[in-house]
Structures are given as structure tokens and as C-alpha cells.
Image 1: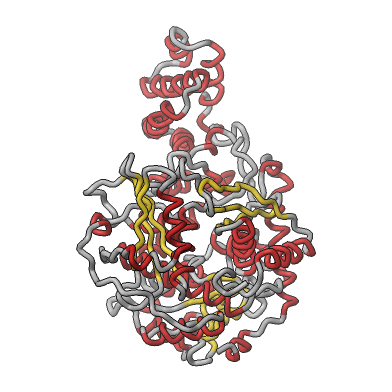
Image 2: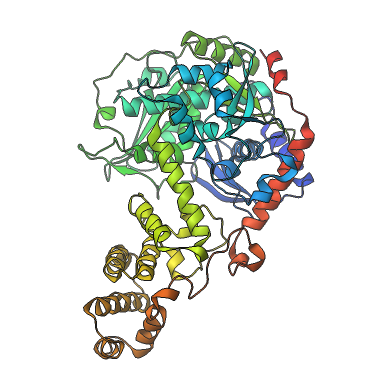
Length: 605
């Protein structure tokens, strides 16, 4: 099979799948393959999860084998970067310290003074770019509030190798997590294949971010160019004949030779659109990735996350960009769809490179022309090539000196601590939780478990944990502020009455609303019950009164979260934290035994 048919992979997909299954099976981890989608000929997607955990990855491709290999490859990328544990799940202190290290066996503690005096490349680059109006020591003090877990030093830093200078830089873990998130995490059949994928993703997200923030209008890729690639032309035809769709490919190189392609799927029936970006040194692979990404986890007839075109839709909200980054769904500026292009279309640079080793050298040289350096960390401790790549100036999701996201995350940490220790809550803590939630842009369906990133099997929790607005209602009522409780409950009821048509449920919620109103009015319980009985069944009224009769017990009436004390937690049977912790300890054990030395990366180029 030639390189094009192999999609420039260094191994057949079936071998990749079985190799990763063997690695996970040897660890005693069972994988479950779910959510197969194939609503358009030649477009496949699948989810792979570790059984009895919240560890799930998605894959896509032009065949069953390529989709599965994609999902399994992403699983290795995420597991070996400990991505889920660093970016989502908080761990109990004893687990964080398991085997004598927090994040990796080659980590090192770093004080603020050591950071400020460092001569290492990455730190010097960041300090040189700090806004002159900011005090660097105060900035670092802000960074320390980022850590949910307590660590033994100001910072815990991990070594990365600068591929350009061949020098090691130690980068604080919390800066890695906040500034780069999962951007640049990669895995592949060989180190070179993995790194080509990781650098491609960084370029893709950089182009996406720049186009959004600077309202750049990328030129449309003309059909005369697309017909040079029959497979891409055929994929577009399959999409367009699936409905009243138009597929528009965009040259998202920014006029800088970045090998990035964008695609807009336009539904002419309802004026909605969906946008995706993809990158690879070879145009055909970049375009294919972009197109298959459109239908990852999607049915062409029931597309989720699509946006209705509106000429004056606001797109500058930071949450909009984060939504695009995390879920691939968001609004694009009106200019993005115009024909007043910001630069001329240029055909992809025709290169003679065909191996991943050659393509890696090509991409490193391209980044060097843009004045960028590449930092890499090898995390292949399970035996499948995996890395994290950082390209300062390109791969940042948040900036080193951007105070707002740091402050917001610190507030998020405080919120999580208070919720997890709700049995010790006081009025000030309740006010802090309420204030945090009122300033947070959460989904109307978000539960408290969603907000604190607690993995659960189902959402059969007490009503005050089942929805964020109900949680605010309960906290306000507990504090004795019935007016505020009524306001937050009314907000909840405003969208729930449309979403839940079950009469029994709506009757109960209306009774809660009206019982709170009687409390505000100052009616005695007897009079309140008498009035409500005209409209509501007595068993419903009695249930509401039982729930709300004692404000002091409102957030404990049906049980409380007791995080890190799983043996005594009433909800332990519904919680996935214990099996997630078990997997984390297994990963740390293999990490400790791996003996990876980041200095070996100096030999890569």
C-alpha cells in the first residue's frame, strides 16, 4: 500500500488497533467501542472508552479501521499525557502524592525566585513577553492560586526539550495545563508520525484562533484545484448529495504557508453552518481530516452544534472561542463567509517529502522561518510513541500574563473545594458559591457533578445537586433568603417547563414555586397548605413541605457529597471516582518504571 493510501501512517491501522489493545489489555483495562456513525458513505466515527470509567476518546476516518485506529491513538495520547487527570478530574491528596511524585517521575520543585532567575529558554521567552505594566513576582503569585492540589513548592515543573537549541527547559505543570490544555498532545506509530500530527494540530488551532480574533477572511479553495485530488472531490460530492448542503473548502494558510484547511458545511434548508479546521503537510490528508472531522460523532441528518447564520451575531465572547476549541461548535464572524478575502489563494506547497521523518523536518523548518521554537516532552511510558509539543507564540490557548483566566480558574478551585466540603459550609462559603455560579456561563442542564468535574454513572442525585439553578435555590433558602431562592427557582422553571412535559413533574415544580411564594408572603404553614390544596394534590403539597419545611436541612435532607471519603459517601455506588483513581495509580506505576529521559529527544532531529 502506498503512502497516500496509508494516509502517511507508519503502520497499517489494524496493527495500530491491536498493538494498543494489547497494551491496555496487559494492564487489565477493557475497552468498549461505542457510538458508531456512518451516515455518509466513506465517513466513519467511533468512541472508545475504558470500561467503568469516564475515560473516552473519539476517532474518525474513511474506513472502520482508520476510525478505530484514530480513536485508539487518541486514547494513548490522552492516557500517557494524563490528560483527563490534569485537565478535568481532581484527585485526593494521597493519590496525587502516590509513589513520591505529583505529575511525573522527572518533575522538579521550583520556587518563585528560581523561576525569575532562570536561564532556561522557555522561561526566558515568557518573561521577556510580560506586559510591562505587570509586576512579575505578583504575576507568579497569581499563578500559584491555579493549583487545586497542595504541592510542596511554589511550582512543580516538568522538563521539555527545545528541538532547536537542544536545551532542556523546566515548565511549571499548571502553566502547561492552563496555557496549552490538550493542544499539542499527540501519539503515533512512530515518534515522527506523532510529532507531525501534534505540530499539525498546533498550526490548525493557531490559524483557527487568528481567523476568529482578527476577523481574517480566508480565500475559498477553487474547484479547479480540488479536482486534482479525486478522493477529496468524491468526499465533498458524498456530503452534498446527502441533503441540501454546500461544502466550501478554505485556504487557512494565513498567507504564511501553514498547511491548514478549513471547511464550511452549509445547510441551505435552514441557513445553518458547521465549521472545522484540519492540517497536514500534504493537502489531501489535511482536507480529508477536515472533512471527516465534520461528522465525528455526528449523523448528517441530525447534526449537533450547528449554528444558524445571522448577519449580526456576536462572536467576540471568549466562551465562543473556547466552545470551538473544546467541542468544535461556535459562531464565526460574518466576514468569514464573505468573498472579500484577506489574502490570495495559494496552492499547497508541492513537496517531495513522503516519509514522516522528512515531513517532520519540513515542519520544523517552516516554524523556524516563522521565528518559532519547538519544545517537546516524551511521555511514551506505556510503550506507544506519545508526546506533548509546545510552540510559544502559536500553541497558547491562554497567555502567560493574562490575569483574567488565572483569576477565574482560582475562583473555580475555591468553588470546587466548598462544594466538596459542603458539610462544613458557612454563610460566607454559600455566598461565594452563589456568586461564582451567577457569574458563570453554564448550561441550563448542568448538574453540580458536571460543574465540579465529578465522574458519575448517572445523575440520580438529590434535586439540589441535579441542576445548578436548583443548587443556588437550595443555598439561598438555607441562608434564609427566600426571595433569592424564589428568583433562582423561577429561572430554573423558565426553561424546565418547556423541556419537561411530564405532568407529574411540572405539577411538583409549580407547587415548589408557589410554596416559596407563600413563605415570602409570610403565610403560616397551615394557611399555605390550605391555599395550595385548591390547586395541588395533597400528596404533592406534603412532599414539597417536607423538602422545604426546615431551611437548615435543605442541603442535607437527601444526603451530601463526601468527596475523598468514598467509604462513607452516600453516593459512592453512582460515582466513577474510585475506578478512575485505580487507573491513575496504574499509570503512575508504569510512568515511574519507564525511565524516559528527555535528553534523548536531542537525537531526534
